[in-house]
Amino acid sequence: MKLVFIHGPAAAGKLTTARALSELTGMPVFHNHLVVDTLLTVFPFGSDEFIQLRDLFWMRTFEAAAASDRSLIFTFAPERTVPEDFPARAADVVRAAGGRVHFVALQVSREQQEARIGNLDRRQHKKLADLGTLRSIRDADASAEHPMQPLPADLTIDTDRSSAEQSAIAIRDAFSIAYQEAQSPYPSAEAPPAAH
Image (cartoon, rainbow, N blue to C red; front, side, top):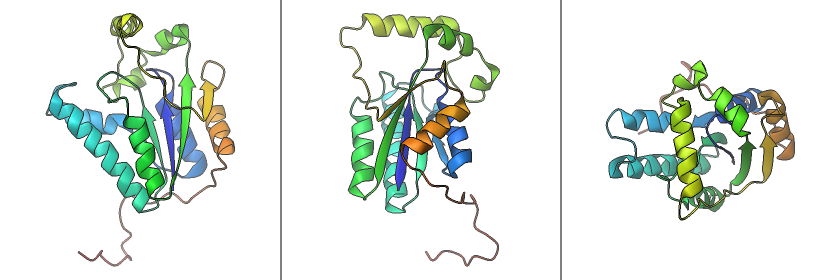
């Protein structure tokens, strides 16, 4: 089992790169906003319930995927409501089941980040899409008493200079990811029902 853990700031191209990598490899994309958007229908962002359930869902998914030998691509934007040890715990869960974790850092210039932040495709999920909010978050992070710890990076890609397709090829080649047949989200009509 392989977990490709793609991280970077808002508008660095994480989901676009993940989707391109999925096309190349057949690996499914576990986009972090799938959980975030679901929880936001019930709990406010940053509330204790939101933070606990988000962490639980992410971690249990990694654990179950590793135990089932199901490789996946995860996208992640570091921010202050996520415990700093989250990436290490995710890696520990996967490695404990015999899997491998590949951390990929995507970088983007301030100019490109600001140019991309308002793109319509960012509104598909409840992503940060407001330039003023982006700037205030960056200012708060820059002036914070305790800066956020950098995440691990086995591979770093500058998305100003690399398209999503080029980035996906670089990731595939760097970690020798062979193509796997994409799994259907639903059981086939011929498959016997799972035993309960």
